[in-house]
Length: 464
Ligand code: 4AD
Ligand code: MG
Image (cartoon, rainbow, N blue to C red; front, side, top):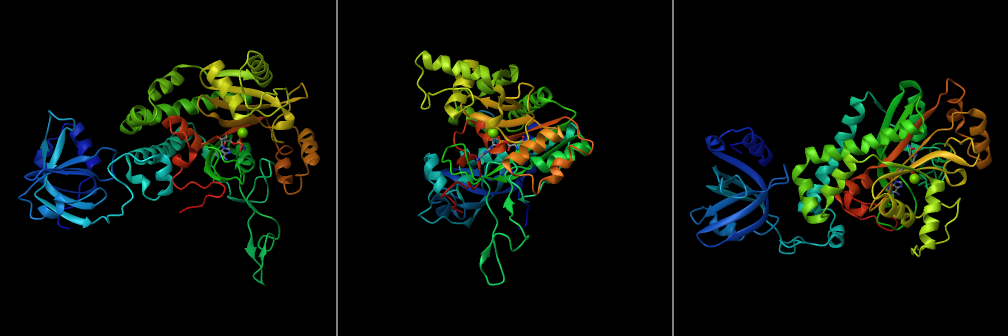
């Protein structure tokens, strides 16, 4: 190639800084055809080069040496365009490129599954490897990439230390029995659960226990990586592999924990609105009308904090007043279904909320027992349209109480180190886990986790 290609994103950046793009002379752009309209003497290609959400319009005429080939290009073709930038202040796009040469780099077979029209989410899930070429998924995965950095920026700027917790573990951090067990072939080639490590190993369901140890050295830490759960819930919000952000803070109680959760969510909203304006405008317009209003409302409103016990009362009242739940036997001690969480956040609070102090029986062993002896200092953050997006708690820092609990459920073996943290300079500490894929659903208005993940894994679904 004689001239190095310039990206559309760079063109927009230079343009926004007031640079005269026509003075660049002939430039080269490489990208993929989104649409092509040819009317004989003149033709228009909407070209996307992947560098930003916006397309660039390529204008060509019948003097183009490759005109016949170019006029027949269909959606998806890869091309190289050479020509000058022409300013178009009267048009929707501020500039376009007038092609003096177009080289076809990659033709498209006629069976190409993507067409000019809008496809359904379901259809696109079946061709997950091609969906980043559509507007919706290009927007989603760029927001995903940008927000991943945002998460790091947020915590690093606050002085948090990023910890790479292991993906292979010897414990079920949540004690919920939803682990994927790792098997390897032994000498005879027979699959074994214990041959490799000499004990059972599994993929991590949460980095929390490991990150707690670091919080008791660095004070403020976080882990952010993939986690795995072998739960067969076939819902729009459950995946077998998902990313989780798990901060852990020492010398901090549940109130401090909730403050940090709220700050994190608000930061993420501001970050994507600021860094991905085109993508977010697309979601607001095409995917989830009212999204901006919803997000801006969240930014301005303090999150409601409500006791689990109060939540149960409100749900019972709702049933009395005739509200129909699928599970309408509401009683203290039950685990809330998504419909109950959504009722509280959508109908009662009408915004994000924290539900706190859950019955200890339905929550994980590491959560700090409250003085009532019945509840734990746990907290779920619930949001309209989705239900739970964050789960967190103050951790049990008292050795005897924690040991008794762990002995009772029989998970002390192998977790002595975790208990030791309570003996060796233990202090109150708290933390939480945000499902990154669910957070993206919330921020973009996309309603299925299979769409916020590039290659979703769910029970019975392992394509690509
Ligand atoms: O509530 P969970 O199970 O909490 C924990 O794992 C704690 N160890 C977190 C902590 O305190 N450090 O999961 C936390 C969040 C949920 O609120 C949800 O957003 C997400 O992880 N999550 C899932 N996301 C997608 N698919 C699944 N199967 C998920 N399970 C949990
Ligand atoms: Mg939870």
